[in-house]
Every structure is written in C-alpha cells, then in structure tokens.
Length: 578
Figure 1 (cartoon, rainbow, N blue to C red):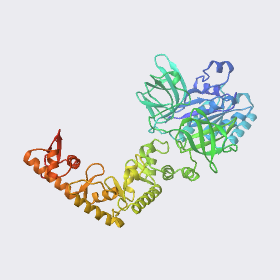
Figure 2 (tube, rainbow, N blue to C red; figure 1 turned 90 degrees about the vertical axis):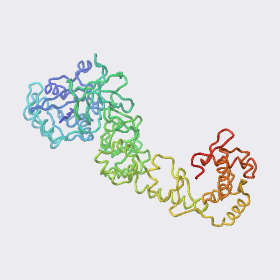
Figure 3 (cartoon, rainbow, N blue to C red; figure 1 turned 60 degrees about the vertical axis):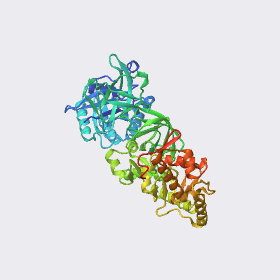
Figure 4 (tube, rainbow, N blue to C red; figure 1 turned 180 degrees about the vertical axis):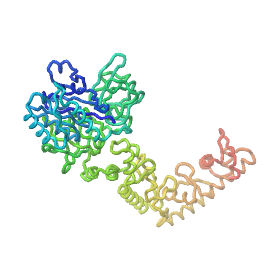
C-alpha cells in the first residue's frame, strides 16, 4: 500500500535535517535553499520503514512566507510528521501548519520532538507533554538528527500510523496534481506529483486539465526508479514526450480523459477558523493550485466558491482558504455546480448519501455519462444513487421534474384542443424543446403520439360548430368534379383530408377523394392501353383545364402511381393493381 507522509512545523525546527537523517537525502535542492539554509520549495525523498515498506515523504517550507507552498505539498498527503523543537516548543507556524492539516482532513501522524540532544531531561519531558496536549492521541517521539537518537523509534511509529491509514483508490480514475516540471536529457519534459487516485503505466494517455490537450506517458518513475506502473499514494515522475516544459505548470492536473469536470465554481461546506463574510475574497488552495475567489454564502456553513480560474476537483476534496493568514477550509460538495445558489440543493448534497446527491443534481434531464464524469460519485455509488430517479435512453430525470413537465404538456394540449378542435394536437418538436433528451422523456408524458403529432390520450379532432361548413365544402367538392378548388378555411380542409374526404393537389388546392380516384382510374386505363399518357391527353379525358390536369398528374407522381419521363408519364410497377 503506497502512502505519502508530509512534514509540517515552524522554520528552523529541524524538518529538513530530520528528513536527511531519516532518508539519507537532502531535500533542499535549490541553490538559494542551500545558501540560506531554509526550505523554500517542496522536497521529496523515499522513507524506508523497519518492515521494508517505503513511504513517500514530502518536506515543506516552514517560513510563513511560504505557507502557500506548504499547502501545495500537504494537499496530497495521507499522514503527517509534525516537527517541534524540543527547546522552543510550538511556534506560530507550528500552529498554522497543524490547522492546515486538520482542514485538509489529515488526522493521522506522528510528532517528532527534535534537537532532543540539546535540552536536559526535564525540558524534554515538558516538551513531550506539551506536544501531547497540542495533538491529542498522536505518538510523540523525541529524536536527534545529529546523534541519531530516536530515529528507529520514529520510523516504527510512522509504520504504526501507516498500518491504520486507509489505502487510496488504485482502481479509480487517474488524478495527479503537478508540483514540478523540468527537462531531462534523453527524456524531455518530466512532470512530478503525488498520485491521488488510479494507476499510471507506460503508454497511457492522460488529459492536461484544465488547459486541455492529451499527453502520452513514455516513462514512469517512483523515487528515481523506473517502474511498470505507479499506484495511488505514490510520488510519481512521468516522462511526457511531445510537450514543452512551459506548457505544463504547478497546479495543472493530469487526469483520465473525460473523467473529471472543469469548473469556475465549487459548492462547499465551510470550516472557519475565523468568520468569513459572504462576498469575501480569498485564495483557494486545491491540489497544487492557488486560485483567487469570492465566497457566496447561503446560510450556515454552506457556500459557493466563485473562482477566477478553472479548477479540476471531485466531491469530498478538501481546500484551504487563505487571506493574509489561513482563514479556514472547505469540503467540496459539488465540483461543477450551477451558478444559482439554492440552500435546499446544498443541504441535500451535504447529507452525503448517493440518493440525496443524485436528487440534488438531477433537477432537469442529465445524461448518465455526464454524471459519471461529474466527480460526484464512484461508479458503485452512482448506480445506487440513480435508483432514486428515472432512467431512460441514457438520461436521468427526477419524478418531480417529470410531474411538472407532464402538467405543463397536458395544459398546452388541453388549451390547443379547446382553441382548435379541428387540430387538437401539436407537433412533438413544438411540444418539447429541441433538446437531446426529448425522445427519452416523451414516452413518460401524458400524450398519445400519432406520427409526428402528439395529442392528449383519447382526444381526436372534431368538427363541433363547424359541421355545417364542412358539409358545405363537401357539396362544393362534389359539384366541382375533377376541377381543383382552393378552400377559404385551410384548417377545415386539413380536417377533411385527415377524414379521407378530400385530397390536396398543389399548394392550397383540393379535390374530393372520389374525384382523385376517378383521375387515377383514367390514367391507369389510358396507360394500360397506350403504354403512356401526356398532359394534353389527360386534360381531354378529365374534361378540365390545363392547370387542374397538371395538379392531378403531379399528385399521382407523388403518390407513386406514375413516373414522369420528359413530357410523358408511364405507370410505375404495381400501380395498376393499387
């Protein structure tokens, strides 16, 4: 099981010296760090435990000017190694680092009381008691990086904490926040970071987020040693061909493609060290990034962080909120929420069970694939949560939304039937918005579909008060024979067409159904005898003008009775028997 331990503590309390004594590696790699004798950036080293296991150790700066760097290192750790000078005791950065660890949910660790060789036994005992009061329930080990005293005990204590630490999700989606980018001869661009979840192997394709673009992993190393794959919890270095060093930065994430949302907003539950007003501007520390943001509160501890730059996050992530000092932290409830703040929605998210989370998220139809990439739930949790909503055609929607939509649809169709009894239906495309989910939702609505038209169940077109007008139009059609007429009431004409009383021929012109059948019979008989028919011959047979003859022949073409060949028309196969 791979785990990462991070140091914490005040400047000059001996963090880097202790790391060197434990690991044999000097994590102060920068010339300025070596010249000034203080840690400025993050340092990394492997830490061997007595049983042969290896932890990844991150050494963070202790100076107050570099707290943001400390947070970047602490966000990926599983356990802490809090360093306290035996002579000085806890100092301001000790307390702030400890607060940051708690805000990040890092509860397991060990306190190392350093420089034990420089104090007398009574001072050492006082220091141990003060450390126990500072971090209750955590082992306190007195050590000396100079003499080596207590180092074996410290390694053993770290091993016991590792035994109690939960394993990271090695089977999950890949998420690695970049903390260093550099170039190596023969390898090219190398990015390092702590692998939060998943497994990375040579040849894998990862997405750079939030910038976009894919990269291929050419090589994988863990603590300078090539490996076949790296697992969640390990410090990883990835060789990335085809990308320049300046195209990747600390704060970027390397993730499984299409697996995590990119958002300018985070819905969160706050944990305040000092009161934070709604509208306050803060720095949001997440992963290895620091992003300016404004806080919009919505009662109690619930709020939305509105970011000035996009972030890649998942539900349950911890963030630290800082101004001049650390103000508090937050737990992500929704990594890609809508802008509108609704307290009831956040309260559902706060409950934390899959059904409540899905109910808060699926307020309108949402594709199930997009839910899987929302960073809200694991695959198993998503399956459980989806049982609380309706699923159809790859979409999920709530019963409440369906009830509201059904009521609105029924009201529109009822109004349509009242206003237009001849045409009481509406085109499906008109009834529902042009959304990709429309087809999946339609079967759940109180409608009866007839072709492309939707009706209220059991509702059919009726003449009502226009029965006399319909009868009058029928008489006109009967009297006009094969001559086409243009009715004054198109809606009534459409009704009679649906009833089978008339046939449209051309734009707005109609003949009776009987007249159309007579025209068809004339054409079939003539073609049967002569093999073809022309416009003039049909005009004479029908006893109508050229316009009406043309309209009837074109309708016969449309219906597949005839096929036009220049000025001639011939019967299509099977037309004579139809």
